[in-house]
Length: 183
Ligand SMILES: Cc1cc2nc3c(=O)[nH]c(=O)nc-3n(C[C@H](O)[C@H](O)[C@H](O)COP(=O)(O)O)c2cc1C
Image (spheres, rainbow, N blue to C red):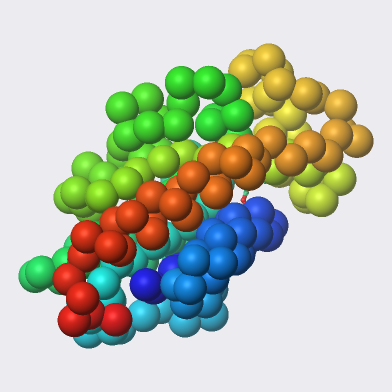
């Protein structure tokens, strides 16, 4: 199983690490790879039994490394099953976590013509003190519009770790059904 992440502030990495930890408990090795450090070659992806990407969203889009990854995946003639996880704040609200109701997932799937085995948006972290002044003001404005916290001292982790654990379980189930000859 190949497991990749694209992060800016670390939450997508923590989510990928949690998935790796849960899979390890089931005897499934998967070390999270940072897409900003290295993008995988198409041949490597093609040989995977299953590919998981955890990508953070910023300003309405997945991070560039996440989008580049999906562009590579898109070129594969016989792509392995894909698990696509978007990390964003929109998903902190109920009914905003599937491809049907999450705009970032929907756009990524349409743009890269994906047919993911599993696509889910996971709530990330709001951490005003960490952001630059401009980013902080922008996010506060968005939070004001979406009735979220606007106090610039706020630091909240919205990630539902039980949902992340369920994703790991689904990955393990998908792997059981996948072609055994792939890596
Ligand atoms: C500058 C900035 C822009 C963001 N834009 C969005 C956005 O458009 N939609 C959204 O739902 N969340 C947005 N977020 C929230 C992030 O997706 C969330 O903080 C996530 O946990 C970031 O993941 P990371 O820590 O892996 O970078 C934004 C956060 C920042 C700091």
